[in-house]
Image (cartoon, rainbow, N blue to C red; front, top):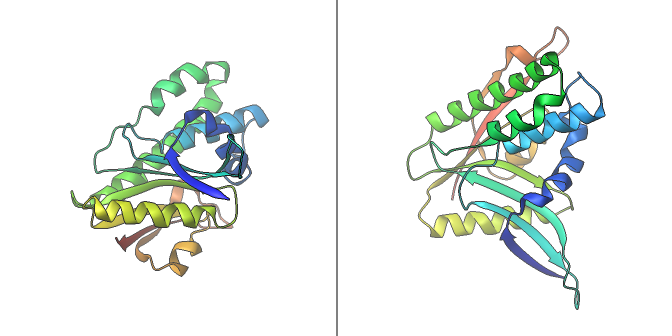
Length: 201
């Protein structure tokens, strides 16, 4: 198997959604809205830069590869244009459902601001990291961290929450910088915990 790290192609967003829609779907709306809302979450983690990557496995003698994982990064103060996509695509949903999507955006912006407040100019933020194949995510992230270090970045920051496999970062040498309860998504039965991690490159 021949693996290559390539620039991420936006046409592969549906393959990311296949992984994360079951994990991140809101309680409101039908399947179409849930997939739309999760796509909005994904796009809110894609910044306008050249630090968007995918790992593709190519079998011998095959030109078409298998999309295995992706990782997106941003420097402090990066620009995201997800709102432009949202304004175009959200018109078919009710105002109530659109309000649900805005809650997702507010949450992401809040956590990005908290994370970037800890960063220096020489640091980088991992904004999204998704694997479709066991081991593929680690292969991609390890190689990209080596590249980032060679480019002069000092520390990698990221945030995550209880809807993701946050223990993975604990088990792979990341330092827990902050843990808090996000009240807007919490219930009487469960606190919605968020985590900010850091790792030296």
